[in-house]
Length: 225
Image 1 (tube, rainbow, N blue to C red):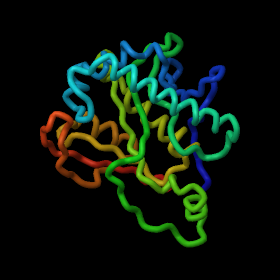
Image 2: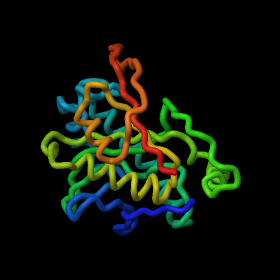
Image 3: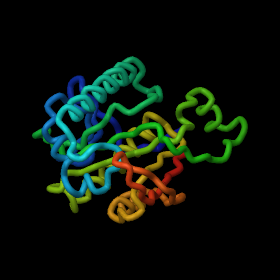
């Protein structure tokens, strides 16, 4: 499946990264991210829009989440090293980071969606069909999620990071057919970020958060191939 990615994955020693700007990178998680990870998830704006984690967000959950992310990333990085031009069945990136300080500005990830969106079958014999037959995970719906610390809000950080991740990874290396995102129906700021990056709202639906509260969710999608 031919791609036209402008942004590319680069390497800083053994760590891959996606350049967002001269001062921002998307990288895998690191062991020393725990404190800022906790701060991020306990910030009022992030907590108000989240539905999957407890409030307050504890340090041990941050440490466990980072450890799991690093294990996943390590396996994918091995695949990237062994076959640099081959599609990769997952995303090793989790953190939006200042450069060169390395400070965590936010998080961003790409995971298989719990609410897949069906697309029309590709044309028989087409390049897309051949790709999806060889890499069946590429036809699954993958959700992108992102959070930014309040001190970096209003600077376009989330929007630029989302655009870079989709361009360099979802298109450039995973070669996905579709990327989606879930949001609260009331989260107009997140909707604006998604629309700016080519996502369109597909439907709304009831969701229940980890605390048992029901709210209206909005599902967005961007078809890539």
